[in-house]
Image 1 (cartoon, rainbow, N blue to C red):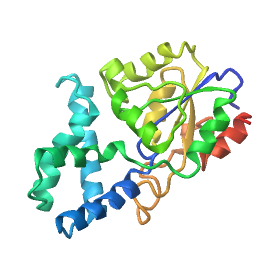
Image 2 (cartoon, rainbow, N blue to C red):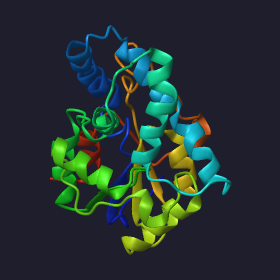
Image 3 (tube, rainbow, N blue to C red):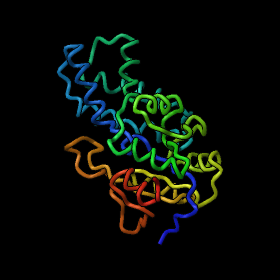
Length: 243
């Protein structure tokens, strides 16, 4: 059994866990198709763009490349990989910036805002994401995410699952081991956080990669023994006594 009574702060992974990146980008991409006369398959584009994510972070995590904000990584992936691969020509520099900032305009999953409001009655709630602070703040404004404080990777200049991300967030929130809970749809994130004194909650997002995306890419293993496994933030709030 896990003793959850010491928890005083709950931090959330963002992309896929609290916001629907696939559905949001497909929706906006279809507007770009109409605007530019493209016939692009945005479900395929989202998959390819998200596929650039971990390979772009890996050299930073390994100490082989300097830190860059995630906004910059999204733009570089767009210009160097996505636009050429899918033949999306004729964009001005301003339009490239606008399109790269689609990652700031992602809709939260339907359970998230109400669930966070319930949790805020009892806990400090914050994002613990690879987003930079400005990106996380714009996402919060766009989707009405009621965070108590916004944390971002540019505060610790590293990316999860590097220890700096978990240790610095825990320090900033003045939490000891066992007093902070990470909620994520990605078991690798939870496993790393647990090694640094976090309690863990796995949040299922079967449509993270789109309606036909199947189960969350990396399901928990039996030995993971996460403190909680839930299907919504509202369920999490109910289990933790949020009102």
